[in-house]
Image (cartoon, rainbow, N blue to C red; front, side, top):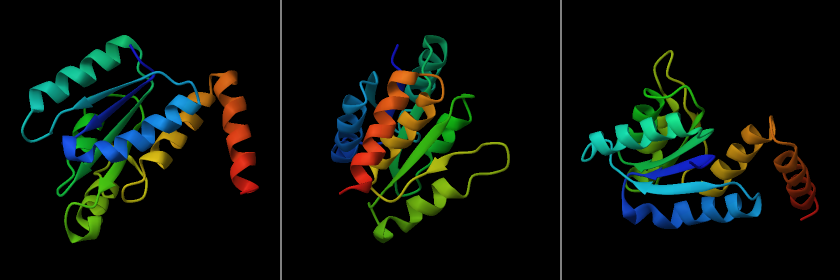
Length: 149
């Protein structure tokens, strides 16, 4: 299994996932991309999370717009960190941002900015870097490069 599973609520969000995948490639972090809606494919979401849990996935990135329940649904089924990426599908993405950021007690989801698949991947790399020195070195290099830009 992969270190990161990127789950999109809709294939229309693929450009956001692509930005995350570019960053994960840069850090040499293995990942899978899956499309599954929390509302239209709840059994598929449960299967993806279950297989990730069993397979050693370290971080889930869940990309969703509108009601944006996908990150919370994923978080309810794993003890791994979940990073939510709100999508600008309506209301300038504020509905998705609030839905992801306002999780109930006991079901935390990290939330990055609207459409920021790149930041979700960087955060995933920072989490993985806690136990992987190769990734940690690449994170330090990336930070240095960004501070000089």
